[in-house]
Image (tube, rainbow over the protein chains, first blue to last red):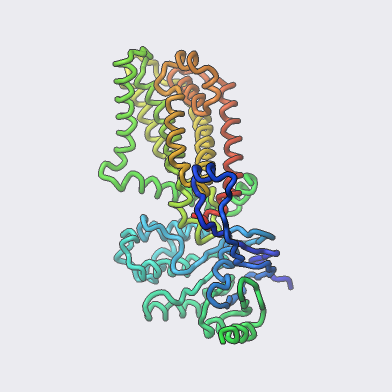
Length: 244
Length: 265
């Protein structure tokens, strides 16, 4: 049986050019036409290939600064790749400490906008609207602008939208650091329920337990290269070793 | 790319809904946040008309018949263009939350913002029709030719979308495009036949009705809504071609520069 592809990455890489003096105005660019800015190249991701199939839960391990976040931004289609190409089959949602929400909009409007961006129709959003609000525990503040919310409230709303609306491919970057203990318990419960079934999930976490429990396959990254991609236990072993 | 977007549209039909949702929220944000609300959208063109009327009709005695209506239709079309360009130079920055966490097509952000401006223009156009037919004296009633405003508007929409794409994507690499555009925009304003008598405009600035992409749209809109005749088709096709070529350039820039917006802004 051939499995359906969710993400196909072919020889992708990413290099950031960090310029020392900023040439970001017309004036600057004109006056320094023959004096190009000095840039420092940072190789964030070295060339790599891999495939992720629909319904898989993939763990992503590596020490700080090894390129995990850059990789998921590339895979989510937020950053373009410098080389090669990425095929993404479906909508993506990248979650770290928040999802795309405008602070100028109310919680209600944000729910509709975010869920719509994730591919839901208005009717479908109407149906899950109460579920989102109750899960986020924000019933009283539903028509307040979220700029008046505490950071915990914003994070809860974001998580609730992500859980209930959900994209085809979800990138979860250290999401269990959100909210108080009660909310965290709820969040983990969601994870254990049928939520991830049928969805493709890429989980970035420093919690070995979480990765071990939920991931079919795990990738281990070091200094911008993909060192290992396969068996979860083996990847965890390599990561632990790297930390010593 | 355009074919890609269209097939995508048919496949995931929530796109039309999403564009409308984003447009409505954008419209609400713009007008319901201040005390005067929607009234402001209606007062602004009236105030502009009053100012230009005093300058060009009372002081300079241009003697254009039905000058208030003449100004009205010119100004609401011009205002749509300015709001859709000057107002969107920083759109990739202000609407970052929409594309920073998902693979949403950035073009949708532009289309929905311009759609929200369209709602404003629609109200203004209704006001214009009321003003022209019932308040301005000595004018003939609107004819069936008024409907030509629809293709003319589509032309204006494409032109505004194209300019918006070009400007906001240059903004990714050159922040002071905002100031450059403001200067260019006021230049364009005075080189458009908004408050000049058309004969004088054509005589003093020959070829500008073709050179300036918005001039032709205004000239044709007046033909359709005030003179009750069909637009000058040569001019219309020229302007449409102008807008489409700029749109292709805009989409090229979106793919080239706009794709890096998430990391550069």
